[in-house]
Amino acid sequence: MRILVTGGAGYIGSHTCVELLNEGHEVVVLDNLSNSSEVSLDRVKELTGKELDFCKGDIRDRDVLKKLFSEKPVDAVIHFAGLKAVGESVQKPWEYYENNISGTLILVDEMRKAGCKNIIFSSSSTVYGTPEKVPVTEQTPKGSCTNPYGWTKSMLEQILSDIQAADSEWNVILLRYFNPIGAHPSGRMGEDPNGIPNNLMPYITQVAVGKLERLGVFGDDYDTPDGTGVRDYIHVVDLAVGHVAALKKIEEKAGLKIYNLGTGTGYSVLDIVHAFEEATGQKIPYDIKPRRAGDIAENYADATLAKEELGWEAKYGIREMCQDSWRWQSQNPNGYKS
Ligand code: NAD
Ligand code: UD1
Image (cartoon, rainbow, N blue to C red; front, side, top):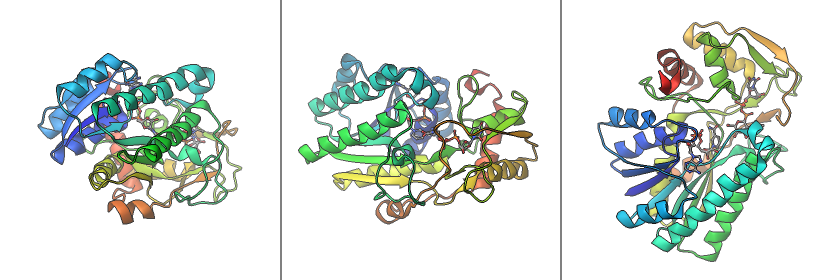
């Protein structure tokens, strides 16, 4: 199939491009490079030995989309493009709603005009808000989000579901990612955050490489086994493979489907610190800090549905996630800029 990958130069998108090319799909990436570097796509080509088409452009630009869809028919869109920094979204809500929601509305409008009605959308476990019980299944009610970023995911899920309900020619797969970490096992591709990382694993790897001094652990008084927050960390390559599985479902005329992509296992912040130290031999000094606003105690997936319906399950464990994150960070201390 020919797949348009929006946001394909980013962290999850670039890993997904590798898996798509390895499966024999044709890939065209549309990315405005607002949070990524084209070097990631050079690495995709290097690792797969295959070519892909790249268009530097914005999903909000109708002319670019029209050109892309008319040049060669696109069979399906995997839609990663969006802004994703939770804290920034609180400061810049308009920018987040405009980029993520207007961008998706324009993309979907140009898709239907071009007769391409297959989309896989990057959603997030954040749509569950503060779940009443864990693990969460896809039947767990969506909750109240704590920030505009989360609301864009929740609202876009609703918008895409309504579009599919109104026109059964659409196939819409909403993938709710848990906490992607790790990097390509080659050490050639990984997460390359701008500035000081907000998320746990990139913060840990930057402490390990000496760019940051100490990790702050946000709260040790949660109702969890060791008091620190529990999450479902998933290797980015497993996540990427999940998209290839979802594409097969699209080919079966899926209609509307929603899947959790997680491992089903929760690890606390201190579990991750210890797993990282064991897997890499690097010591991570840390201090206990106050809770971070908007954080929840615990969230992990019941990923049974993805296993049953997509034949997909996560293969990598926490040790590989830590080792691969570290290989990427230690070999590329300045990310794609080095
Ligand atoms: P990322 O920032 O690395 O990738 C997103 C890409 O989209 C970037 O390359 C950026 O340049 C591009 N982009 C942003 N706005 C664009 C626009 N208007 N037009 C064209 N390109 C644009 O992020 P990621 O971690 O790879 O996440 C990919 C998707 O998955 C995002 O939608 C994100 O919200 C979602 N998601 C990520 C996580 C996570 O923890 N990383 C968790 C859940 C969901
Ligand atoms: C966050 C976002 C979520 C988004 C996800 C992936 C919030 C409230 N949620 O999830 O919407 O989909 O990132 O991008 O921000 N931690 C520390 N010290 C740190 C960093 C994190 O102790 O320096 C802790 C957190 O308190 C949490 C865990 O580590 O318990 C994981 O944090 P993080 O990696 O930021 O992911 P989430 O908060 O789960």
